[in-house]
Image 1: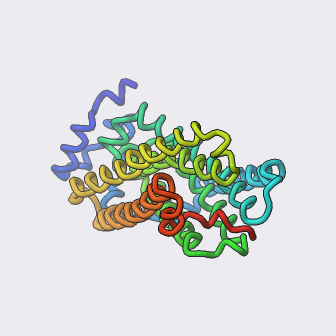
Image 2 (image 1 turned 90 degrees about the vertical axis):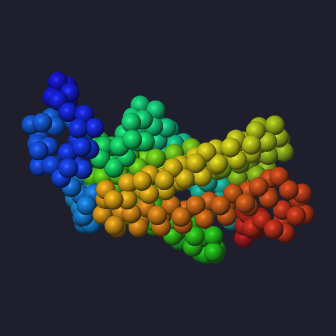
Length: 299
């Protein structure tokens, strides 16, 4: 611990700004959570994702979700049939992922606040990648689960797969560059909202929204509040951070940061609009204007 006190983040940033990075030796840094690689100034080595220390845990997490999915299909929602049963089982696995990932992201934000909001580019510890690999394992599982269901090929399906591909690419970029990992955890805060988003849909599909109406309305309200904070709030901050640090990184990271944030902002805006219409507008208007009734299919 004494070695890590030899330097501070301010001193590191000053040396980087003065092009004196070579002075940041391993002896000086000690076990400080910073790697003097300069990877933020070059294209990420994406092929490093196939290194065994990345590939093995990724495959393991993927298999964990395959196992969870198999257990859910065997034991839960047996009274439902067809597409409704598929959606209930799929959403249950999604809810499990959101709970775990959301807790991990909020835990990191609380205990490593400086890393997430002040040093999201440079802060790095080897163990931090496992939370991201966990979510990547889920995204691969969900893509496979979605694409293998023959009756689920739709615009929503395509958008979901593209969302997962974009998220996986962003996470691979963070893991292989060993930069921007706290930035990726910041994005995972959106999963805290997904807990209520999935819970809301599960209650609708399982017809428990009428039996537990007070709980359902509470989840609806919390869903809207957390949607604004955990999605729009986080993405606004991320775009602001990329803008203020645009000269400190390779143009690829700047372009990817802008494009990724804007695309996901638009997607979330579309989803938010549909939620507001479906949950807070008259039923007839909701059915006509909110394309959220794919779950009413019988087949």
